[in-house]
Length: 249
Image (cartoon, rainbow, N blue to C red):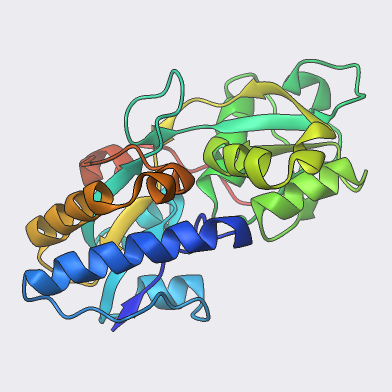
């Protein structure tokens, strides 16, 4: 059995993720569904997402629509209560160094663009979709491996602009204010369905959704605030599949 919540598991968020999983685990077991004691933080992303014994995982929308949608069970989507964003959806924020004069992402069309991974919707696809509507494409200058590392790349002058998932940005504001203080937001992408909560093929989607909702309600107020999830919602798989996927770097 495997449970992993890797998408927002930076060190400052791990206690909240552990508390949430403990509540989900107990709610699943109460429904007769076996669940591991703890989250797995060692398993690779794609390995975990494709594991037949996956009890709970969280995946980006791009790999879900391109590689996983017919291999996993879609349980739900976490809603982080982002401003001006539909429930369960998210968007990316264009960030540059705080001292930069330019205030429009188009001014960075040919400059050094940092992205976390080529299969990330928020770090790669969303900014390229935004750019494509304006007749250009950001160059794939620097692959960093994580949104946090992209932010550090811009702050450290190894790149000039990056698109950071708005949820990650909010968490970085909490846990690394010196980093976010060295940057400024100059734009945002369109919204898209957020990180999907999934389980292995053949899993009971109704029971999984109910357990997630019950677990969130059971969290202590301080843990719920730290987790930042406001509610658990359902977004049809068709909405994920309708999002375009631009070419990779």
